[in-house]
Image (tube, rainbow, N blue to C red; front, side, top):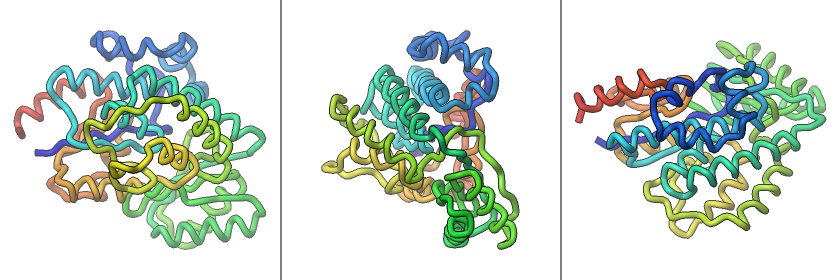
Length: 311
């Protein structure tokens, strides 16, 4: 049975996450100690607001996810394929050997600062829209942009019936109102601190381009499905160029999940806080998919027992 690792993105973080793993697993602790004292303090003792600052969220999330992957690897659980939601793509690449843990944490630390800088002066927002088609959500964003003179874009195509919009707060709010008029079941604001995956992230993409000029990329040991394409990059494709584009482009996560299933992945392990990606798998993939979670020490023990049963 092929196993796919799915790495969570921003928005699922919460204070206290990883504390039990830090206490129990030395391999997790080794990765988490790559964080600064300020970053560890924010995750273990900080407020939700402090942890939602993308300058903090990004290194903390990636360190947690790589640490969990290390725990699983040490117990014989390895991925045949990996994907990550937005920020989680960096964790997936580290899992595949493209980056070391230290490189991944350092890169996303720069990424977080660059994205925060790009967000300065923008009254921004992101929201999930439930129950509309991609074209309907795009129409909502286009109308809201015209009506408000500000910008909203459809940026995360997560699963059938769930699409995230991002941009300036007035346009995002207007797009949500239009979506409800069109019959959206619900709209939900997301706890993030910038208009991510929009045109506003162009300055951050330029910063990343400079960082990657000094970065040595390893050859992926397993296929990594990219957000930008919903597919695995070919041998001659440029990982750096893909990541530069990723920060300002829509996330094709539904396409990524379908591709993984087409390639034979039957067991999906969500790594990181929350269970949002598991929900996306349930709504996107076949009913016989095996879905497991790895956030807490209890999750990991349960996961190991479940894998014994199905392998």
